[in-house]
Structures are given as C-alpha cells and as structure tokens.
View: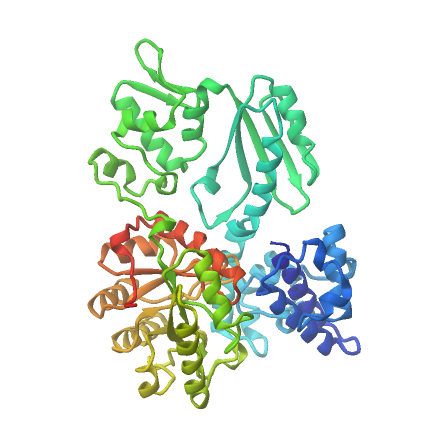
Length: 565
C-alpha cells in the first residue's frame, strides 16, 4: 500500500535531517520519524481520493503541514521533491548504508567524515582493513557486527517484500484481463511459490497473437521504461522500481511452462532427473517420450506431476526440500488454508500503540470470519510502544472483558505482550499475568547477546508456566536486519516439552519464524500459531502472509495452536 512507500520516504528524510547541521534539523528529524510511524500503522489507504485534502490529512495525529503536502505530492507524482534533493546533495548513499544493522545517521556521518565511507562497498573495505574498530564509539565487536550485517544487506538489497509487490501484481492482472489477445496468463516464479521477497515479477502468457499481446503489455500505464520488447519475451520497469518480465508460450504448452517457470532451480532439476529415469524428457514445452519424442502431456501441470511423482505438488513446496520424495511416497502434507485459521491472538489496541479500539478490532475479526481474537497490548517497560504498566492493568483487563460481553458474535480473549528481560524473566507481576487468558513472551531489547546467552534467556521464558507462545522468535526485519542468534534445536525442544507455541508473525517485514524454522519446529512437535501483530484493523488482513509461511513450512491443521475459548 502507498502508506508504506511514503513511510519509508519519511523515515529516510528523518535520517537525512539527523545528519544535518541546519537549524531545527533535530525537530524536523523527529517530525518525519513520527509521521513515518503514523503512516506505518494508519488503517486507511491514503491513495484514495478522499484523503487528497491537506486539512483532512493534518487531522491525523503526527501529520503536519509539510508532511501532509508531501503525501499529496507523492500520490500525484510518485516523488517527493525535497527528498530527491536530499539524495542528490548527500555525499553518501544513505538509504544503502541504513540497511546495515548497527549504524544510524550519526554513525554514518562519522564514518564519512573520518573514513570517507560513502556506500556499502567503502564501508566493507573500511571494516575489512580494521579501520572502523579504531574509531571512538565503535570497537572490535561493532566492526564484526557491521561486517556480518553488510553481507546480509548485500544479499537482500534488490529484493522487495511480497506485500509491497502484491498491489503492483494485482494492477497488472486487472490490466491483462482486459486484453482480448491473451487467452490465459499466470504470475509465476518466486511469487507463485509465495516467497517472502520477490526480485522481479514473472508472468506467463498464452496468446495466438503474440505481437499484439506484447504491444499491449509494454504499454502498461505504470511503465517507467521498456527494458526489452521481443516476440516471445518483453520486460518493463515500473515506476515503483520493480522489473516485470512476460513470456509468451503456445496455449497447448501452458501446463508444462507453468511447472517450469514456477519451481526453484533445484526442484526443477530433480524433477527432470526423475523424468529421465522414467523414460521421459521434461521441458517448458511439455513432457515427452524420450524414444519417440511424442508429447505425453503439456496442457496440465497437475497431470505432469501425477505422471512423474504420483501426486500434485503445491507451488509453495517446490524448493527441493523433500517434496518430490514425499509425493512419490504419498506422504505430502495436507497444507492448511485460510479456513483453518479460526482467530488471531497477537494484536494491539489503543491501550498501547494500536490505532483502533478493542471493539473495532473485534468487529474486524467478525468480518474476517473468526471465532475469536486475542488482544495482546504491550506490557511493562516498552514505553516507545505505549506499554501498559502494572497500575493500568486492571483498567485494561476490565476493558477487554467489557468488550467481550458487548460483542456477542466473537470471543475476545485478554492477553499481553511481555518483554523477556536479559535473564529470561517476564517483566511484569506474575499475579497479574495469571489473570490473563494468554501471555505472549517477546524480546525487543538487548538483542545483541551471544548465542549461548540468548538461548538460555529464551529457554527460561519458555519454561515459565505463564508463557503461552513466543512472539516473532528471532526478531528479524526482512531486508533490514537479520534475526538474533540462538540454538534453535534447544529452544524448539523446550517449547515442545513446555507446550509453548511458536509464532509466525504475519507482518510482511517480519514473517518470523521463517519457513525453514517453521518446518524444523513442526517436525520436532512444536505447535505453530499464526498471528498478524496488527496495530490497526487494516493490518489484520496480513494473515495471508503468515499463511504463506506456514504452507511453505509444510504445516497441516493438526500442527496449529488453538487457544482455549
């Protein structure tokens, strides 16, 4: 949604002001940071016409004259001139450097002044030559962390969250549907496998008039640049800075092409080897008999899988993680669907840092068809998130119970998200936590601990009989910071033994646990709970992204955690 795009710009403008020595830079940095936080959880789409009014925008808490004008400017032009000027004048590639965990605007400025660091490459060079550790405020540990984070930033710099790409894909889909020359099309690649990030958008098209279909495609209204325009393949660059590739194939080969352009390289190689072992040849054009070269199947992707491995393999599983062997053995998982999600028990109301009331969140739960929701406002010392202190607990609990009695169509559970301190204790009075329906244990502070200490910290919290589930267990942010390190096997083992569920946090920037960890935890017998961590009614719709992770992690309905309602 455009809100997140503007929020990212405001965050970057805040960082530029932090680096600035101009008058009032501190106050401007804070204003843009607050505006970014506001937009990050604002429940309404600002691209809608009713929000293109400065006075209405200024009524949103955290939005002022300048930020309001910039919102309108971005909606109209997809740019903010002041921000573009900041980037042009800056001697450093600030956005690139901010992706490196552990350095903010002030440190970036220091690195530039003292070591002439201007981008990730020069930062890496300075760290590898041991220059950063000599600077005041850094040291050996900081330098090591920077080097580790640089590798992470480089790996993820060209990939976008699936949630940011999805609106672009929906726009393209609606556009292609209106083309009479296109008989059939499907978005393929990592998007169809529902990976958490997407490098580009790949679309497979069947058309009897390829030239007309291609001309139609490259004239997509949001095209900023045509990268290539051929007979069977074309590429465009969208104004949202993502590449879209379209490939045209004959309609009779659509099924085999769909298989070929969906699976990972490793999955496809293994499937082709299976085909060879059975006397076939598999390509994007079809499944052929090797001896006669006659087509055995090409129209149906499902039939190709059934011929080769006895069972259809869902797109999310096509990563060469044992799915083909499982298909042959008839032991593929019955992957969960949205119908298996009965509720959401990680969300925040106006009692902490949410923008909607308890009753509004409940009404959204009813709209989504849930049987229950769980309010889990922040408790304790997390003041940046408006955490509830112990003196406010009774008022909070009473408000949840009152809302539950008023809203009859859904059960409203009372929970709380509680910080796990450095020693593994829950930072809130236990006699109060006992009154809740569930307790969410999470870590937000002191995340740089050594792996063994972090493991002990988490395990102690997991062993606490009050803990219901562990929220966003690695605390990663996709493309921004890696998760902290701990012994996953030990933690998963303790979670299983103590009946503590592990969360898939559906926030698109979190998706934590990731699919690999989910699969490992499930295989050890841990229960998985999928929540949105919603701070607004709009964010409750993020559940589908957590579902993607669960399906990629081979989760079945029996592997889900359901609270006592």
